[in-house]
Length: 292
Picture: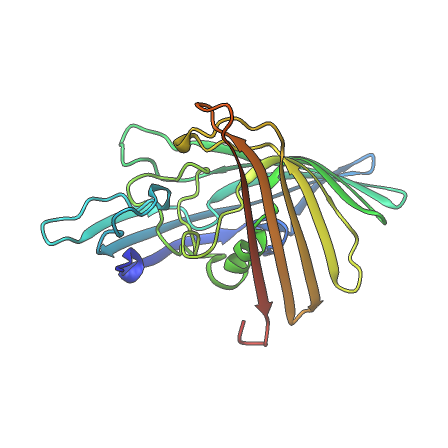
């Protein structure tokens, strides 16, 4: 089976954080710049700007490949595809504001972030979309933490965080959408390793809870706004989607995560046709100094 990824190269032109950051529970998990403090509330700002020249060349995807992978350019007379784009990187561009306040043993925080790309659907007159990707309230205390709002999903966030931390945090990775600016899950100009064994957790409305860390272990469970599968007419979503993750952080040298997802779906054309969508994802990270 031939893979389109066998021949592509990306040249980074510009990729800069407002401040350095690392990513674990979200992409990115920033070290914000404090810009104001009023009555115990701290207002912070963080963001990222990036631009890449992406050149892709190689055979088209095998017949029957899912279109969400984004490799939609048609082959030439020799059976190859070739495309050049100027686009944002793996984490795209974003500007985020945060609020934070300590109340006794609790911390109340909130985040509002806008994400967007520099490229469009190869239409000179079209503007890229702006995605309200993060808007949530958090309360953290000795008992754990609760998040209400829109944030990164729990299922498969371990693998996508590894992709960010080790490989494509400041890079482009797979060019993903060669023809269009983004797949259906939002304006991400590039895909890193998504589509090559890694699933994108997406950003969804949720109510989630995480336990405190105990002996390096932490459990996170969430109820999510359900998602229909319109291509297969599974449009009935009677129950919320359930996602969970068990994470282990042994030290700065090793961490591991296993996550799962479940959702009940009903076929809109057949009242008695119901299915359960379920999945499991896992990741293991090792940091051995110069080798990760």
